[in-house]
Length: 114
Image (cartoon, rainbow, N blue to C red; front, side, top):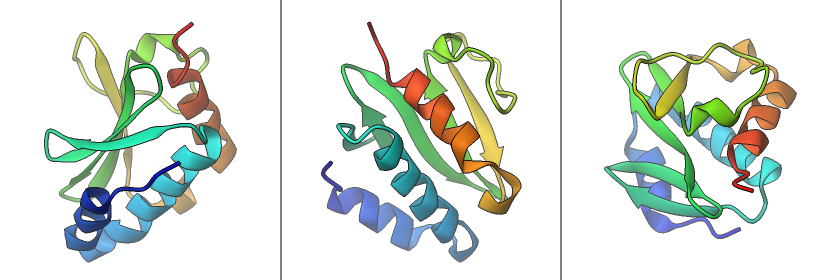
């Protein structure tokens, strides 16, 4: 579990209304999958185990919690949005609107590649 400076900077320079959400999601990712590797690709935080499985993206009005290979998530706690062939996301305006355990389960499922 290594947190990298590029992601610290990304969070610090994101809009103030998203910084707590980004920090909370980052903490939740490491809580769900302690052996996650954090990187900074495509101008956003990306998380991987064997392969990339998750990304965070601050947008106007919300933060995307994005899933690569979203089809691995069985019975998602929250509906996934998007039309891409390989990626879907959840729009998060406030962590208060989401159950941490539901998100944690989705993150854990997305991180497995066996």
